[in-house]
Length: 465
View 1 (tube, rainbow, N blue to C red):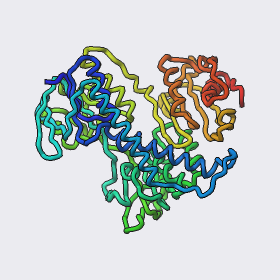
View 2 (spheres, rainbow, N blue to C red):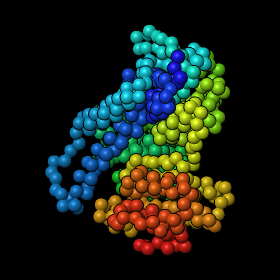
View 3 (tube, rainbow, N blue to C red):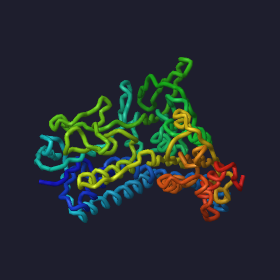
């Protein structure tokens, strides 16, 4: 009998298992795939960042090295080697999780985990054999899968998801990206930097529509420089694979039909919670109409010894959100009283420039009727950004009009994925814009832009603009 059984070994699952083991609980993890790490390590965060970095190196070599005084000839992409390097990065990370399981004495059961009852999990192996294991507490961490539309047939050759986009054998001449969200913009960037003509079809009137609108507008400007074309407020009505090309039909806001053709279509309209084969009903666990596992504020399901975390429950589908929830649930089971502030979990888009945000958007503050002030600072005015030729984008700070407390920080620019951590720390400690503006930031650095945006929010006192 285990103290804790975790179903799923993605960032939420493996962190939950490690934290439970650290707290002295006998722990097992069940994973249906042959490697640990879930979507994030195998076909998500890690491999996409590896390709984003490789493609950015190529793009810089092709477009900015000459300005830096570095002359190259016969520059070309070896897509086979690029994919091989990506696979090696994935393997290193996956092997690292395997090591952490051994180090923490966590039993790994390879196979599909499904409920027999609220304390018994059946693990069905690839060869059809199975075993039952029992646990006092069960954590569901089964993650998510790419969503599609009912009329789109994903053949995984020409009409693909993010998973297949990580393993293309060639650089597309033309790629249509259905969906202007995070995944589509990241993977569209990978191939756009290497010469693909990318067209983005988005139902909403902005890119990355869940983020502050300023970020979507700025990202669109930057991606246009890569040759991206945008069809915003367009509803996809048909996707047809004709062999060597795919035809996409979409309706614009006037009801007119637009026809686009490409050799690859990437469907990236979001992800859906994944509970296939879990047999949750055998344990009496409630699944919502949206396919999510229903949980309370302690991430406990309606069955008292069963918890759920990550993409399979409500909230943003982010690896680091799942990690926080994994540690949280392990601590709840151990009798501790942990806390997560969901408003302060940052979101990042790993395009270049990167987009990063935490807290409320301007649109949310308007909707809530909160009086706020805004401070902005463009990277065009940053000495460090000029030195590295990364002058696109800006930092936008939203602060309470009366108390000056920082309510939201939205950045698009170089290394904002790392810079946003300063904003998270500031907001966790309820800092004011003036608090940040009075802290010394090393010069020249990109982070000075955050200080300057805070100065701009504090009585419009920015120094370098």
